[in-house]
Image (cartoon, rainbow, N blue to C red; front, side, top):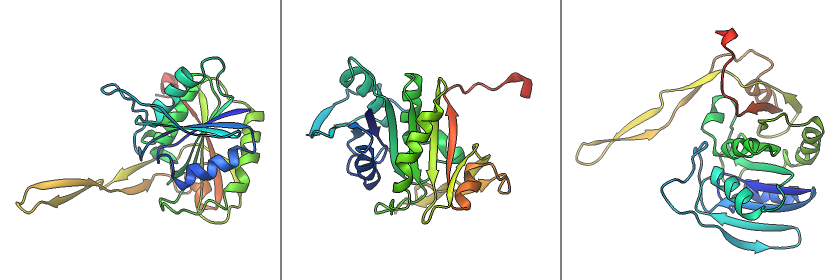
Amino acid sequence: MEILLTNDDGWGAKGLLTLLRVAERLGHVTVVAPDGARSGMSNAISVEKAMTLSLIEKTEAHDVYITNGTPSDCIKLAVNVIYTEKMPDLVISGINHGSNASVNVIYSGTMGACFVAAEQSIPAIGLSLCDHDLDADFSYLEPFIVPLVKQLLERGFPDGVCYNVNAPVGKIEGISFTRQSRAHWANEIATRYNADGTPYYWLQGEFVNHEPESHDTDEWAMAHGRISVCPCSIDMSFNARNL
């Protein structure tokens, strides 16, 4: 199996290095990762600058490329420059440091890469751990990755669909197939002031779950120690019959 890895935390992030080690159990791995952090990039692409692509490591088990582009650029570069004859069998993006569940999926560079892969009909899985620490502990999640990847490959990927997988911190009680929880971010801007009194602003925020008691959502699963597996589609249209 040929596996393409990327992330939005940049090459060298502990989550990506963990994923690389695990993915090598499944086949040959090619990494195309940003050269630094690109969190919150969603599906951003580079349209006003030239992109670079550098091979920095090559072994029998894996090749590693870095780019100055975004996570979405990483997939586009891979399928158009590296995989000129045959597409990868699977894309895995992550392991992200921080949750991409619920409404966070729309901001996520991790999932942005998966959506680009789904556009190209390549099976894609985004992996995230609900811990922003640069030294986050992935040891509880690690044993679940290979069995889950195999399960999802056997289950199949409908056209245009990828999977958003989010894991809680600490001991994991199991896996749940979920839907995206309805939520929003409140109190998102912190105002601060320069020495001359002019204001500047930092993003912050309070996550507000609209349905904390719903047992079928990604947020409920993680709150109860379970890995959430949520299918996502690049088709963002809404069925008019539901209006």
